[in-house]
Image (cartoon, rainbow, N blue to C red; front, side, top):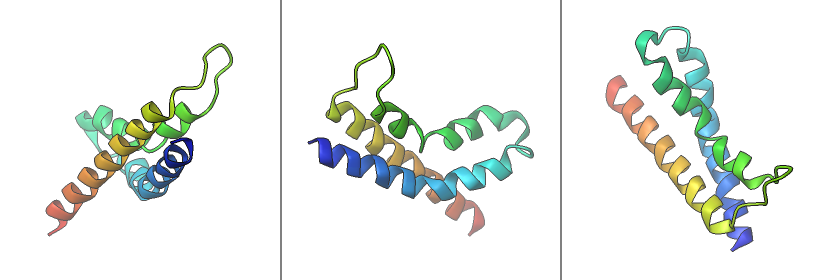
Length: 88
């Protein structure tokens, strides 16, 4: 399960990098929607952060990391769908 969780984390990061770049550009022109843009900007990096071991905290179980990665992939997919729908 640990290898699957690691694979999902890297897929979430790979799938979310264009989203992070787009949101980085949008942050200066988003106005009142800045909190939403920040959530979209940080969502690809959350599973990667959860995978790391933090000093006093123990590493999370692989199932929690995998579910965070799947949620990040779903958010990225929703973001891309919203972008496609608005640009159409």
